Image 1 (cartoon, rainbow, N blue to C red):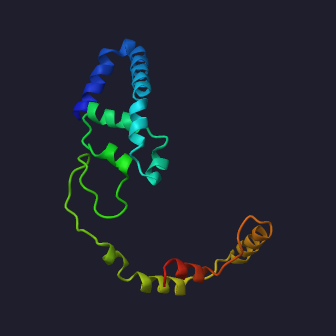
Image 2 (tube, rainbow, N blue to C red):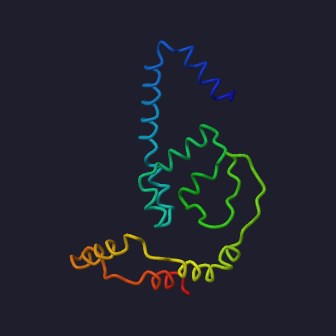
Image 3 (spheres, rainbow, N blue to C red):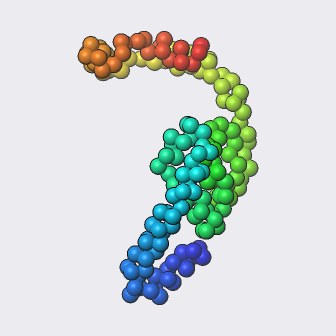
Amino acid sequence: MDDDLRFAAAYMVKFRTSLTQRRREALRAIAALHYRWQPVTAHLRHFAPPGVASVIRERDVGVLGLFIVLLRWPDTEFARELIEGFPAIGTAPWCGVFPSRQVDVITLQSVFEHGVAQAHELCRSLRPSPHAAAITTAGEQDAEHGFAGPPEGGRIRVLQTLKV
């Protein structure tokens, strides 16, 4: 059994008669810590780029960083990455939470190597849905009422998006 789970079970058995009160006290302590740490969180948010700032606006990055230290969480980079942003592409470094494993590095070039040909093949294989007429009619009505833009050709749109 995991050491943390063993400790939690032993604690619950030992203090079973006062467990509800102890939980309330613990939650009050966490709420007080959260309140007192708000200036740290506000300060740390100033370092976030605009795109990241909009995502972490409701996240208590300061408190999360403090908990990482207090709980000895193995992913010590998590709080920094919350503020600076996580890498969108590439190989993620080992975070210490899960077992490390060796993986093949996949380059962006290898991902898109056959992408244009595959996009053309996909477009050639597309067929209208049995519900295409109803969907088209509903879309045209939405456009007439100003709820949507004018209809566009699906294949043209896909090919333009893929820049082919």
